[in-house]
Length: 152
Image 1 (cartoon, rainbow, N blue to C red):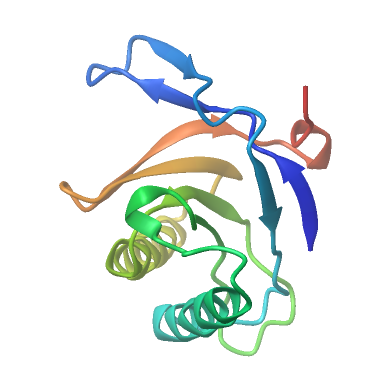
Image 2 (cartoon, rainbow, N blue to C red):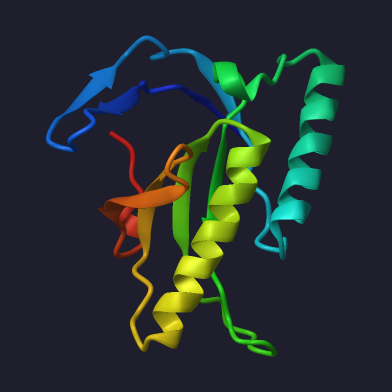
């Protein structure tokens, strides 16, 4: 569990040419909860998030309304061969705002990574943005190593 302040959010235009910074949430306290990489399906992730939401609501810490931004989820996902012990290359999907979007994003990214591997291509470690209307994710930025995950 990490206690932080929201830094704001990037707003991208529909053509992908410009990005602006929205500081409306800047300075708002937030709690980041990081789980271990031990979930194997979208249904497990949703069950975990539903239970987490129930606990946080019970404690009165938040109303946990995903659609309003009071609860957000980022999903880190990698695939690996059956029986393999090493994790595959991880991608991150940012700020998913409904359980249905989370499940669809997980399934889509799982299929995308498997298709890449089966085609003999590499999965790139990157952050992706999920477009729920198109049921497709877009690369936002590449992450070469842990040093790229820094704050400013």
